[in-house]
Image (cartoon, rainbow, N blue to C red; front, side, top):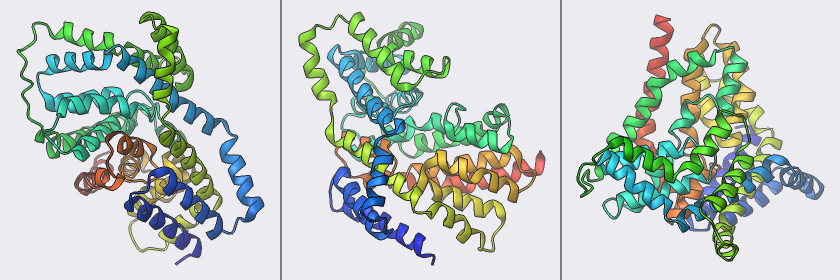
Length: 403
């Protein structure tokens, strides 16, 4: 085995073992980072350079600041009971707790920020109550919150893949719909159906009124989505605008703010977010991403299967965005004329992989919010992946046969 990949496996095993030992993510990631410095032989100066690169970049600052800003928004909404009121509107609208637990996180998932998962978690927890285990509530939160990331052409990994492969975004979205629908249905049929349907509420008099009511309580999140998707603003900028408007609309007094800001400062989550960015920098500097395709391309399997494996493993190392940037051209060169069907296959594969990845900050935030171990959340993804990935491969073969 390539020594660089061997060290990579050791680092992931160490991270998983540390989390299994109930160390929180900050300590687990910190120890793994130190082990990475030693294993890859960066030395004192190299390690310091990597820390500087990871620390003093806009990507790191904006991610940590955005997470904090979303926590502030959540605190402001909770202080005025807006999340509870929105959940009541959704309950009346669907009059079905199963749909509440699935649809609400999908809507919240339109907000492109990791911290949005805690807002979805608040709604799921209130909806599910004690009828299903808390770790399953955590899984439903992160699973359905990420459904939009499998298809929306506003996410960087999708934009990069379509751009580098020459696949029109419209074609990708159209062909991706069945895979996204299947993903949603699997989560609903396998898990959400375990929640009792009954809300104990009478049927609502006006579904339009309830829908508008839910939007009126979540307008700040909707504003962020509109600013990001329609006007191309950053999530951080949009979240700051939403914060200022919430303060004005709900007439928060200066004396109320210290408690909200203090509650929003979740040190463990913010520190973990920063450390994950450091860890990703180590993995990029290790050359593991370059060695991985070399090792896989030597396996005697069909090209599309090789790239499915690559696009499943690479996100664990560099994330979805970098996987698209680094390997899309290679994949489409190896499978000439594949077009949109291959883009759908690889995107579905990446999306599935990220629901397991120890470097996926959203899952760790969910684990922290519900106070359950990382592994007890991701294990629920195994049956979904066992169906989704073969279905994606079969769908690819069907599309290549008929298009």
